[in-house]
Image (cartoon, rainbow, N blue to C red; front, side, top):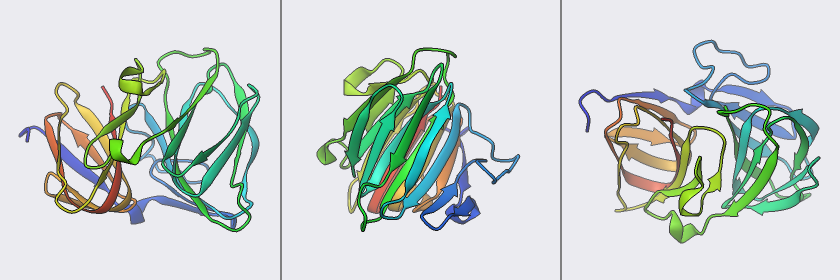
Length: 237
């Protein structure tokens, strides 16, 4: 581990909370009526909302501009429609991505009337503004992220990832039992880990569902001691 590396945990219980009945949400960064000047963003990482949507619930059509937005589905299904003419339903294990660019409206809802849906909605700040909006989806094979980091969003679209206008590489992994993941951040001085589920340890720091971890200083990171853990890693050059 880099001796200059610092780890700062953002505990799940410290996140902002919202409860609208059909929607329960936890905000890692300032969002909506939750405002915390100490947690506005981390580099280009602007929003991580942990959303639980009851059956039949959803977000009616609303606009976005100059934001890179992805939804990482953890339970149930997420249905999407937008002003670009896209319509899709993403299952658990899938990701939908939208580059809002010059402006787009979209809706997201739970197509099941009885099953709860849970997803992480993430906003990243783009490198360029006013670009043409675009939309993409990706189903991540469970084996591709089991005990290893699977890149699913990057500026250059390498290794089968979706291409984003944000300066960020985003990986997913599941870790359980004896599985261990070692990763070198290299010259990347800033990274964030979000625990979507379960428990895991990163460089001896225990993390639970909903916890975030800010990593500064680059160097090596090691995930181990996973208990049904699912994590997202954001490299933020």
